[in-house]
Image (cartoon, rainbow, N blue to C red; front, side, top):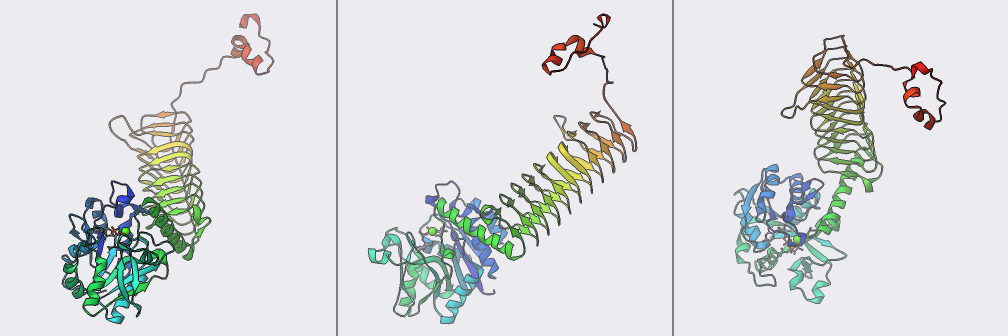
Length: 475
Ligand code: UD1
Ligand code: CA
C-alpha cells in the first residue's frame, strides 16, 4: 500500500520476561515475537517498516533484514511516545499515513490492520486505535470512551483509579495515524505520569485539542490485542499462533490427527492429503509434499520431504532431502545433507550424514553412512559402517549401482566399490573394488570337531544338553 509506513516499537527489555534476550526476540514457532508483527504488516500490504530498537538490538537485526526494514535507535527507553518519535525520524517523505505497532503483540492479523487503517480514513480522524474487550484487563491501558463513542482518553493501569481499572476495553498499542498529526503531536507529549515516561497514548488528548479525534476499532477476536510481557503470556501466545497454523494446514487439506499434540513452525509448508500423527515437530523451513505420512515422534527441521514419502515413528532429520516415496525409520537419523533417493528405504538405527542414497537403495538396519555416494538399487547390509574419519579429515565412500554390501562391513574411506560388485559379510574394505567383483576380507574359518564336548562339557550340561561320548585318544 503506497503512502503507508509502519513503525514497530521494539526497544524495550521486557523485564518481566526475566531474560538476557530482549522480549521481542523470544521465538514463537521458530520466529521472533517481533517477526510475527512485521509479517502481519507485510501481509496487510505495508512495504516500508521502521523498527525502533534499543535493548539487545543485535538480536533483532535478522528480523529487520528479513523485511528489508530500517532501524531507528532509541538509546534509553523513555516510553512509547519517545519510541514513536525516534521511528518517525527515519520514515520516508512519501509516508502520509503511519501505522504504529507494538513489537510485543504478535497476534494481530493482516485483515485487522487493514480495518484499522480504513477506520481512520472513513472518519478523517487524526488516528484510530485497535482495542479489545478482555476478561482480565490487568496491566493494559484502559479505553475511556466519549459519549459519541470516540476515545476520550487512554489511562495506563498505573495511573488509573479504581473505577477506570474496572473498564474492560483495553488499548492494544496498535494505531493508525495521519502523519501530519503525529509530527505535530509527538513533541508535545510530557512525561508527567506514574512511570515518568512519554506515553504515546496521550496523543488522544492532543487530537481532541486539535478539534479532531481518535476512533476506536474493537478487535473481533480479543486475542489479537494481547501483548507479551511474561513467559506465561509467551506460552499462551504460542498456543494461539500454533492453533492458527494447524487450522490453516487443515483448511488446505492436511490431516492433523491431534492438534493439541502437534508442533508445526510458522514457515513450514505441508501439501494436500499429508497426514501428521500425534507428537510430531515440523521445524524451520521444512517443506512437505503431498500424501506424506509422518508418524509419532518425528522431528523434522529444515528438510524437504517429497510426495508420498513415509516417515515412520521417532525419526529425526535436519537439513535433508527425502525424495518421492522414500521410507524412513522407525528410529532413523538424517543429519545435514542427507539426500535419500526416490523409493529408497532407511531403516531403524541408521544414521546418514552428507550422503546421497540412490533410487531404490536400502539401508535398513543399524548402519552409519557418512560422506557417501550410493548408487541405485544398492543393498547396504545390517551393521555396515563407512569409516569416513581418520582423526584428521573426512573421506568419501562411493558405492556403484546395484552393489550388494554384506552385513557388518567396514568401508574404510576413501574407497569405492564398482557397480554390481558384492562384498562378503564381515569384510573390512580398504582398497577399491572393481565392478562385478566379489570382495572378501575375513580370516578363514577353523572348525575343531567336538571341542566343546572335550574341553567345556559343563557348558553343555548347563544348557541341558547330553554330552556326547568322546574317545580317550580324542581328548
Ligand atoms: C503499552 C500501552 C498500553 C497498552 C499496551 C498494550 C503506552 C503508554 N501504553 O503499555 O496502553 O495497553 O502497550 O500491550 O503506550 N517500547 C519502546 N521504547 C520504550 C517503551 C516501549 O520501544 O521506551 C516498546 C516495547 O519494546 C514494546 C512496546 O513498545 O514492544 C510496548 O511497550 P511496553 O513497555 O510493553 O508497554 P506497556 O506497558 O505494555
Ligand atoms: Ca506490553
